[in-house]
Image 1 (cartoon, helix red, strand yellow):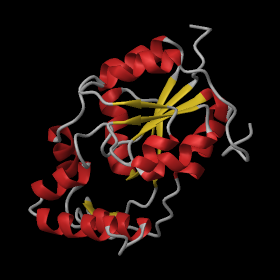
Image 2 (tube, rainbow, N blue to C red):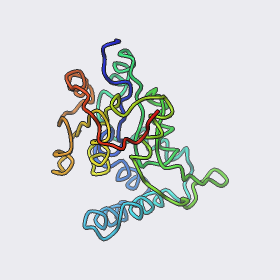
Image 3 (cartoon, one colour):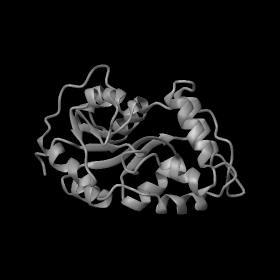
Amino acid sequence: MGDYPWKLVSLDVDGTLTRGHGWKFIAAELGRADEFRRINAEFLSGTKGEEEHLRSLLRLARGHRVDEVEAILERAPKIAGIAETVSALHAKGARVALLTHNPDYVCAWYVRRYSLDGYSGTSITRIHDGRLEDPGPLRPDKLAGLGGLLERWGLSARECAHVGDGRADARVFPYLGAGIAFNSSDPKVLSAADAVVRAENLESILPVLAELTPRRPRTPSPAAP
């Protein structure tokens, strides 16, 4: 266990832990599938930026109770092997955390459900009488989120590996010890990654992590404990 190079493995959520975008399923369950398709098309075409895209997604749940959304999260189609992967990494002495743009209530559900060690998400949840309100100011920034996780546990960027499928993940890869593109079809993500994994089970990242050697992260790193 002492020879394992990774002290922290961070995980993206949408498209990594979920089969497809998690908010696509949430929108469908809330009867707002058409809105999700429009929102996503605007983002993919470049019409709307990342912050506006995220705000539009979170507004899909506006007016609904948190426990209602949590029940949808339980039913959402997810990649196999999440709990087993977390348990295996814990056995090697590594922490496992979410690094995502998802809001607090989504992150907190995943942490409880899969015994994760923590998360860095978007802390903008506003709730009134148990129902979600319009989100507050958004500043989606995974690099800053990674820095917060490293500072929390006193780790160097070189001791962290991140697993994700999107361009926000690709922007993080160079600033830590390794980046794994998981079930991604985006050429920019694939070219930024140290390893590419396509699999139906998250446990497929375990032998890849065991074989990867931490590289020197690009500077400045997101945290310098």
